[in-house]
Length: 288
Image (cartoon, rainbow, N blue to C red; front, side, top):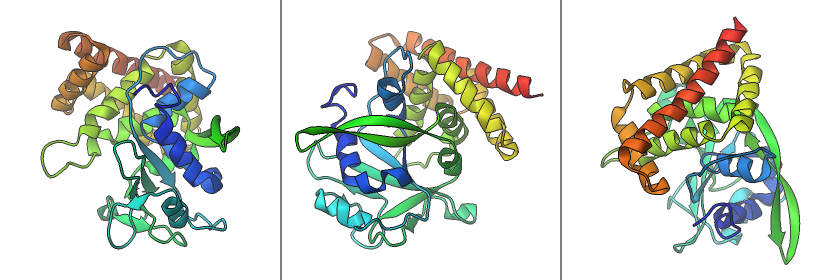
């Protein structure tokens, strides 16, 4: 499925239609961000993108109730919670083409609470999975105009997404901490490297925006550590010192996606992650 076509974007558009009253207070994060910027961000974006069907939605409490709580809106669109009891962060439409949402929320309290679902007050069964680092994505956002067909007419919705610089810093800083599944490695680790690679490979229009965004992030003193840790993770990944098995897994996915051999895809991956590493180095050096 091609995410640049209306059919390819159907999971995202379904989620936006369901969450429409709350979109001004929500931020779409995760794998859809590069696609949204390529299609609606006014950038000269080059290269392929990796497809995702799950829509990650950042909920930074409080989210006041706008007439109908989120769980009732989702149930009206035939979404069902991933848990039988209590608050659920994952909501899915049944069927092979059903959309899936994962609600995420910035970690509140000690690090030991990371990965726990925090009920979203006033919204019934909806909760947010608490993760460290999401406050960066809540603090640095852009608005993109997304066309949505409703009842035969097209409506333009302003959608909040992280700035590209915040997206890169967050992915690079946090991907090594991805949770592991009970059996084997979490495949989202490899996907995170691919999302970063696709931004690094997108051309000067995109990397220029990333550079400007990171400068803005460094205008907030407390964010310096996040940017430095993101840079170090990129450098260690390129050198093979950090999660080399994940780099190999990401290269395998890239080889299949772009129909190239494994050696070419691994060199491509390292090369474009290095573009981001060098970009961050330049911004940090200019700050001194």
